[in-house]
Image (cartoon, rainbow, N blue to C red):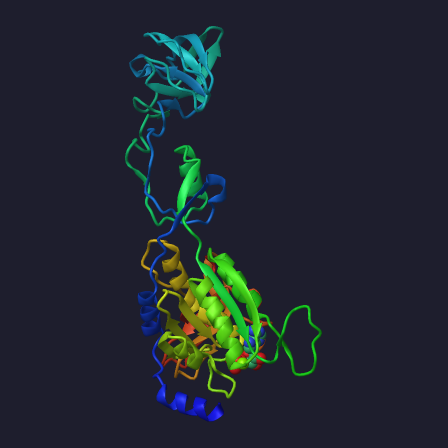
Length: 423
Ligand code: AMP
Ligand code: MG
């Protein structure tokens, strides 16, 4: 087996490509999901709309008051002021939720509350603070600035039949409010992407097994599951598989038949136990990437199968695996999920609070935090060793500083491009 793999490697040496090329290749491999499901609105947070939504009601639904105050006819109060207040007769009281049955005539006003529907004849609201009630009369102490002041006009924000939300929109808090107000109690969304996760390595044990000398606890399974859940997918945990080609093959067959994407960790480097690439090819996968000029995360295999499944073979080191997800898998998952957009990484330029260094040969990621200091974001380096096996100081990471190829140093106080990891 070892000799066979040695020759397979020589034949299959693919060149290392840039992160930008890898990004493009990966996005080209991914086709957005088409299958939809119709779900209750209250289950729709984080889901992606699969249909364009239009409302059949104007918004506001009818003219209503933006203030607690008095409904008046503008022409009656146009010329009032504190020295010569205008007195109007209060002929009705209109709370929110009631259809007014009255028409306000010249010289009259109605008491009205925020959100209440305007009666006929009223075109302007005088806020309570600018009035004084005297029995059945109200004194208008200062005239409105214009006809229509403090009136929310029917259809002013939205007119029935216009597009409310387009297909491909992610449903967050504002979209929830919009869909609710359009009385979409059910919504049609794309089904969630299914992503199989498997960890390869003879040394791996689960979180509940007793650690024996030489073993390593499979943290990647959990980290990747969290990554998938956070990004709207359904993780399918396939557990640990030993570095045994037949077992790996069986697991990969299971994975590509149950998922849209597969994320495996380990076994894609150049060690004697790294079988993934060879097995993917044996199973008919077309490998488009086998190595990316990034640090950490260089050994990265991406392959596509005829059933559409895209396989990401990530390196085993915990930081490398997550960096690969954040930098390359994330946008692929966005595209798969049906979100409309240009699938660009969330990069911002901020000041670095530390000296940052790289060997300059590969695009280098340095983990840490974006912190708001006096209204300005700063990149704060994670304390402890920047080592791809150090998953401990990865805690609280919400950003990766990026040092492009050729850049070996960024000094404290200089600007650095940072990949934001918050959604
Ligand atoms: P590999 O990419 O298989 O050569 O693994 C590189 C390093 O990552 C080794 O030190 C592994 O023990 C470690 N590693 C591999 N898989 C995992 C995992 N699932 N969880 C934590 N560490 C892992
Ligand atoms: Mg391994």
